[in-house]
Amino acid sequence: MKIVKEGDSRQVICPECGLTHATYQLRDVNFNDDSGMVKNILAAVCNHCNNVVSIPKQSTAKVRAEYNKIKTPIDVRLPAHFLDILNIATQKIDASLGDSFNKALVLYYLHALSSNRFSQNDLGLLLTSDLAKAKASKRFSVKLNEKSINEIKSLMASQKLKNNTEVFKSLILRINEDIVQPKQPKHLAELQNFAAAFA
Image (cartoon, rainbow, N blue to C red; front, side, top):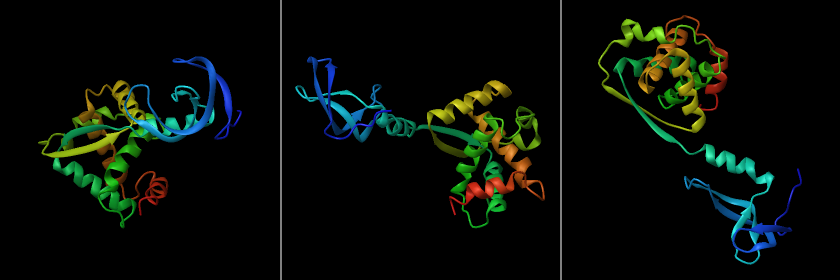
């Protein structure tokens, strides 16, 4: 990969000006789908019309990272005891953590299960348990990037889950089985390492 510097110049084809020259400058650049922008990246700017005409490869990592920050809000209704399960699980992982860790734990399980690092076996069957059958009186809200949305879709397909609520219920019921119920929680060392970033 050729690394370009601010102030470097190159010949380009500009949509407005045709064959011309551009200079690399720091610019804020909108995403093509107008969902946001990435700030302060090196971009080739047309010397005539002052429009961004291209982005060098070295800037694509920052563009990708900013695009991945775009979040979709997901709201589900859960029985009150599901949030108790998360609080107990959090305390068993690290007693110094508050309930702000609960969402991170659920998303960690989402990733670990969808990538098959943790077993998906009988995940859907957990929804037939007695714990799953209760009035959904609490709201659980998370903001997810595109990667997490795709992980939800993957779990829906592999476990025949119907909607986001069933996905989050099954994740929390698995957390109950893995962490809350056993004397020695599963994956404890891994989860404690993950939790250390939140302490």
